[in-house]
Length: 455
Image (cartoon, rainbow, N blue to C red; front, top):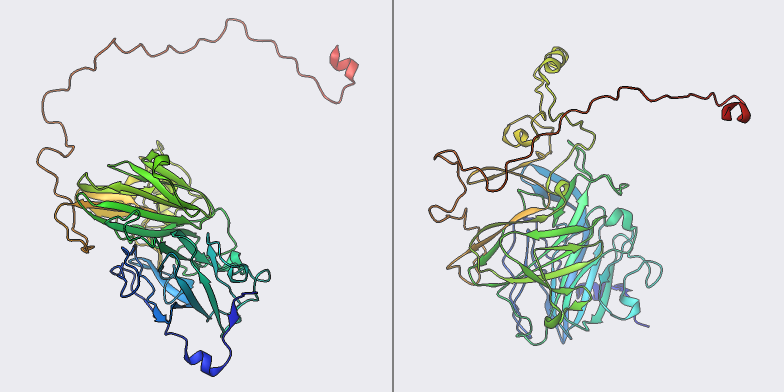
């Protein structure tokens, strides 16, 4: 029976390919194939693709499971677990029908495995601790060998101490391209995984024994304004693939266009069954691929539509003061805490414009600058930037979009705007008057007998 096996002898270990390491948090250029069938490689937001080597007819990769330090956005670092220097780990790309050999070396302080999520491969390579294989002990290397049965969108993650290892950021994307390079070919193909963390202000390591109260919602373990933009040339056919390894669902919404859901981790959706959307929900453990033509130039928001997932380091126990006059209260508090500033009586927008001291290694809840001021976002938010004249492999941020004259919303400077058409607005309801006679209320002592109460 095929099973993941440990590399034992020194001679075998010498044959293991090098495990490349990447520490940079910016997206690396897509890795075009140097041999074998042609395909259009994917671009991993704030990530990279794992190189491979050919050994006969096997494609060989090397994953290194290890503690990593991930910059979640400029100004905040997190102590996570990942692969090859990053969380999430590098994207693995191969072609339908390929024979892949994946070495996994464990530099964690506990055993681990790798599960190839969504792939119908031989049972002994499925990566479930105790069920299909023993754990990979610290310091040891195991090898997984299997043939890729179909193309599609997949991911990898441990099936070992999942509450800890996945909560610490151990995950990665696995893209299997079609054998036919013209099947579902697009001009630009982006990937990212969604994960969530509870990292208290001033700390660096997630609280892993948490299921509900997360304060950092991420694309590829990055939060806005640290998430790379999605760049597309005007007229490009664009595919965006994403997977969800958080504890809740995420409705992903893109402005300025509609798209079709073209694939899941279960396979490609027949084009006759495509359905149009502007928001698509992605449940826990699911993956989605969406496609559209980038025919509307501009800077278009892409984000989770759960509002608290587009904020950073939220204080879930902060009281609401909207509409409350805090002047008297502020004076009293300032006597005890000099420098106290009341906020929130007119909403939270003012926080995005203030430069306030924060604890070390903490991000503002609402932040990010645009050409018109603060964007007031965080978390699972980025921008799809569509521009004319971009070269095929140009993924550089083109800067803010230059709107044609007269096409930006602006303050009205003319006469008072006309009254809206239709009937006059109804009179506001009058205050209700108290009835002339109050209602009679009988109070019964429950300690009295039932008969006495009925009387």
